[in-house]
Image (cartoon, rainbow, N blue to C red; front, side):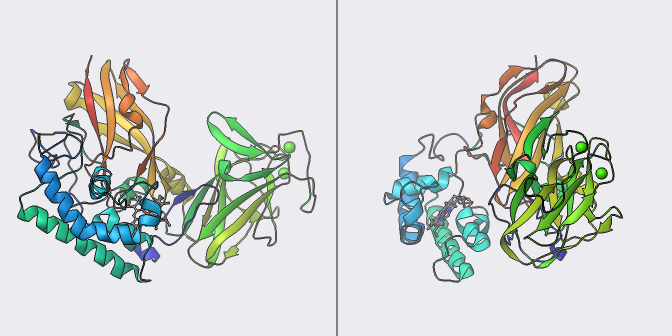
Length: 452
Ligand SMILES: [Ca+2]
Ligand SMILES: [Ca+2]
């Protein structure tokens, strides 16, 4: 896929994870709801299964479920048991290929791996088509088509019998925020990033002493702790090192940028190289705290290009030069026009929802979100800002209006905020992508959200 797709392909790489070519399956995009919807009372609210009979988790109508299971066992189940059982037939979640048809059926429904309203976007299909996950014939598109047709047939039989089986949703609440913009818009409003931009956190690096990890004001970095004006040369075997492993989808000349703290002239240099190439002797223009700088070479700050061939397992090395120089993040990019301030803003964004009309006075709910890897988002810092105390309980993220029970980190929240800004949980929630950044929209539901 080329830059013309104009889509974020920024991935936080943790050690050994892969940035390979990854395409999103584009389904129809729901229009954004600008106002808060109270589920049930708002005609634009998502189609939530109502009451009895339509939900595998709440019992439902046994006969309906049996019809759906029978249809499943004639359509999708033969494919999954034949093609997916080596992994999903026993322990690997979701267990859609176990021999027991009811169990396999429920695994698919309960984990939202099929979307009867948009069958091509079903994970059972998209996983094969977009991620080349376990294709069996050598032609992933053909295999995805086969799965898609089986699901269509399953739906046809269900519909014919008037059976509606839906995943358990958030029907225990009717308080829902508006939806965000699509997450590519949220994450990269200026479309600053190209497909070949990779961010790596210092915590993903393998360190060789005396390079060690540090943490100041919640910024994690590595450094050789400052001990004055120590200055190693590039072939010094006792110098500290940090290695990042990463993969690139395209052969290209890449630039490297880093978020560094280079506070003084004796604390502002590293050596940097890729795949044992020549070192850039990087003299960093001094910073005030952590700032983004391009990796250049010599005291003239000559631009330094890194040619990197397409493929996996590349190694970027950051080596000690002057001690006291700190590095927090690295960006490797093939985008010549990249604007690091845009990137750094885009790495983690805050999405705010106006909840004033729910609580009856000025208030916002916000979260920070970033792309965690090719398959997931990371949500942090669920926060309420208000000039009065708010009672809040059981928060669930909805992606495209659906709640996935795996995303339960914030369901335990049950508190009353003070006035001002309250972070409701210190924990991060890793949420599986549904249809990819170009389509996915994020909203939140609450069991309780009201002025105290
Ligand atoms: Ca220096
Ligand atoms: Ca120093």
